[in-house]
Image (cartoon, rainbow, N blue to C red; front, side):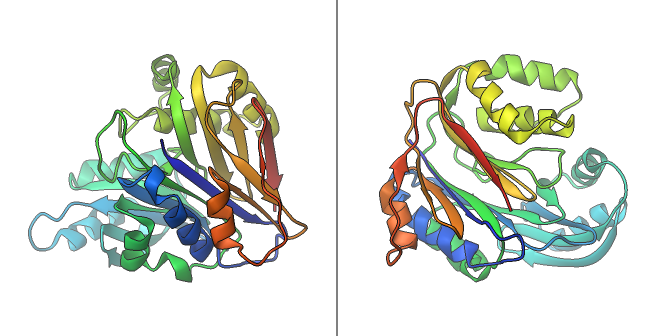
Amino acid sequence: MCGITGILFKDPERVGPVGRIQVEMLQALNRRGPDSTGVALYGPPETGFLLRARLQPDGEGHVERARNAIEDLATVRELAPTPGGVRASVAYEGELAALADGVEAAEATLDVLSLGRSMQIVKEVGSAEELDGAYDISSFEGGHAIGHTRMATESRVDTLHSHPFWARPFADIALVHNGHVTNEHKLRRRLEQRGHQFLTDNDSEVLAAYLADQLERGEDLGEVLERSVRELDGSFAYLVSTADGIGFARDQFGLKPLLLAETDDYVVLASEDIAIRAAFPDDDIHPRELGAGETRSWRR
């Protein structure tokens, strides 16, 4: 049992308190996932790329080693330590897979969590309140975001196995997922044959790449979501975010909960009504549970 959340402001010119909204929704769902919490936040696009990486301290100078590893491949405009690693703004013109793989190969204590022009993923073991206390998520202003609070049922409890998952190596695509995809090993092998590399044994990381691989080939997000309901086995509800939108899919039997509230200004999704009410207590909204096999997407 996990909790998933999403918020999107429809006006492409509008930014709003998506960080605060995520924290409030995720904390309301804490009992669904006390092990770890994470968010994928989307702000105005950068001219280069935002890189978020997990860095395991290994004596003095580990942040400087991270800088050196990144500078071997890209121009570092800005780099700052974070409670769990580093955040960097970089100028880079090559393939993102080469950048992510090269940075990790150059510095064994570094794992790239996200790369994008507008997206950054922040995730840690612990609650939404603890994540906010460490990273000040509530101060983030942007156009949309997705979040996750995790109860680990199979893979281990650590930052890498936490959600959201970056759809490596595609820029600005992330996923949060509640459930279990039982044919993920088949999908994993197919994607590995296409050159994809995975950091974890988590089925959600495979699901993120499965969706992004199709989007990268020019397919429409709505079509990809509908196909996933037919091709994925198991019980699932997931949200996928791109540079300019979000979408959802629920399995054919509707075994994992997901609710939607939509106004003229925004779209909000969550595993439970309590999360939507926590973030929008004063709004006249009427969340509805999504149907079995239902999919939908929105673009700013």
